[in-house]
Amino acid sequence: MTVDAPPRTTARRHARTAARKPGPAAWLSRRAGRGLVQVGLALVALVWLTPAAGLFVSSLRSDEDNAASGWWTALSGAGSLSFDSYSALLEDSGIVSAFWNTVAISVPATVTVVVVAALAGYAFAWLEFPGRDWIFLIVVGMLVVPVQVGLLPVAKMFGAVGLFGTIPGVVLFHVAYGLPFAVFLLRNYFAEIPREMLEAARMDGGSEWRIFVQLVLPLGRPAIASLAIFQFLWVWNDMLVALIFSDSGSQPLTVALQSQMRQFGSNIGVLAPGAFLSLIVPVVVFFAFQKHFVQGVMAGSVK
Image 1 (tube, rainbow, N blue to C red):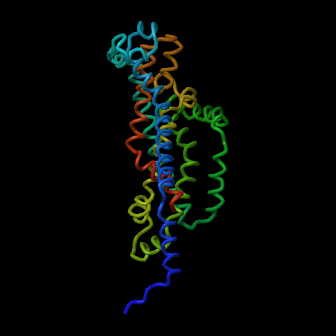
Image 2: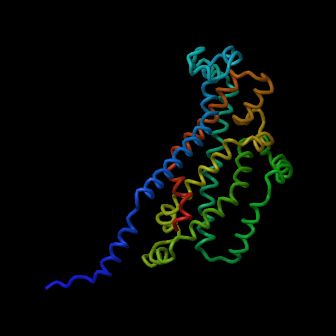
Image 3: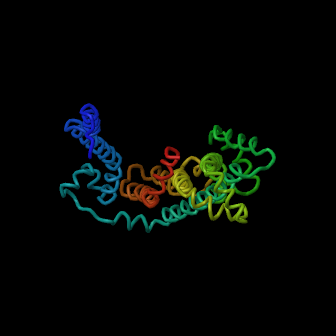
């Protein structure tokens, strides 16, 4: 024998079901809002990509075409496009040397900062040693020191020890000014790892080094990847530090292009391919690590 639910209870149940079920107006509003967000993101991407596209098209045009009309006219077939300017650029020993100098500066400065900051971040987060909190406060306090403050004293010190005007000198300056933020970022990320996980690893006989390599580093991969991208982009695009601490034999691509601009003025045939060459490498690096970068940015909001 079945007992029917009271009419009032059944009515309330149907009312709750109807309230949970979105109506046509709510569905259309949600779909329209999502469409507006996608359109807005597409417009932002278009605005950011247009200068890069214009630079690339200009680098493929001749000096006469660039002087006669804007780069957008090439989209209608006006003028000819070729890679002659890139061939001439790669035959310029100064530009090629500057490109490899940029690689020799950016890669060691990025790797050193990531490795040292990961070790220091783990120590500040999970190891007990005298003065740990005070040392970490000093590291955090170094974040407010502007780069310009250290240019003159560090230049004098590098000159005294023979590092001024060399690639190792530029690398050391970038490492010194990149470490405070890197240590602060990774220490805060490593501190979010559950303590029970580390205690279980210690009870299983794991040493601190093994815990760091096999447990902490894999868990901190998103933050480490984000830090590596930020550090690499900052060093690759830097001109102030390189302009002061490098000479003609160790100058990176940014300084070499600035020298070309002073010598040749508005010679687009030289500047456009060089600028695009300097641009494309950070773009490739960013998209190669895009997945880890997004995970690192979102990690703080989902923990």
